[in-house]
Image (cartoon, rainbow, N blue to C red; front, side, top):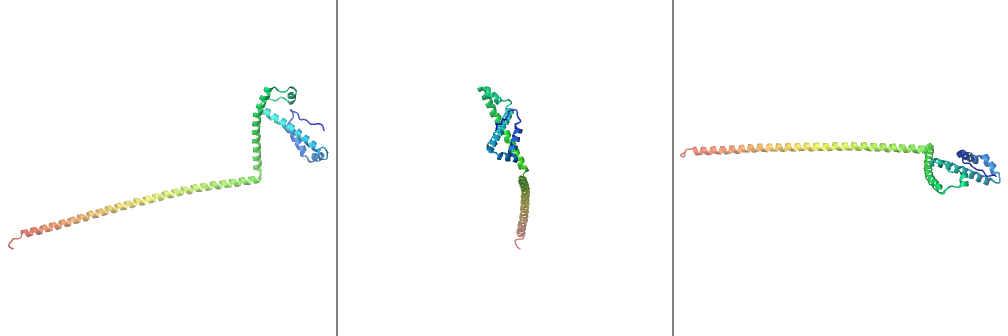
Length: 214
């Protein structure tokens, strides 16, 4: 029943792994469960693990800060000057934020990797890819259909324009033909009138030339 203690120099990750494994071991659980101090033992083990966790976090903070923090024994014996405590607190705040972001990114990456290995997640990803491919195919088809429709409209527009040009040419030709026919009729009518006038003049002249006694 003596208290256990973690030391700063230890490999805290290894100690945590050992202690956690012991707490999960069925034989250890059976042995501890048979003692009247089972709850106290488990609480002591958890407190000891927390001590290792604190030291491990301290080590990571030191790596982020780039400085070595005073040992707990030195702090307990000599204390820390106020100005040094303020500087350490400021550096620790920055290092803690950086460490938090790093651990969050690692946790997100691990979660993503675990999800990627999950058969259900893989099936969902495959279905999502199929849907994306279907959307891309539909978008490509719509694009092709739109281009074909635009080409058809352009052809129809050109056909209408050609018909209008042909109709214009036909109207122009008809007008020219009608004008020519009118001019020809006018010329014939003029000739006919001229011939009648000449014929009457000849008749008048003949009447004038006849002898008066006759």
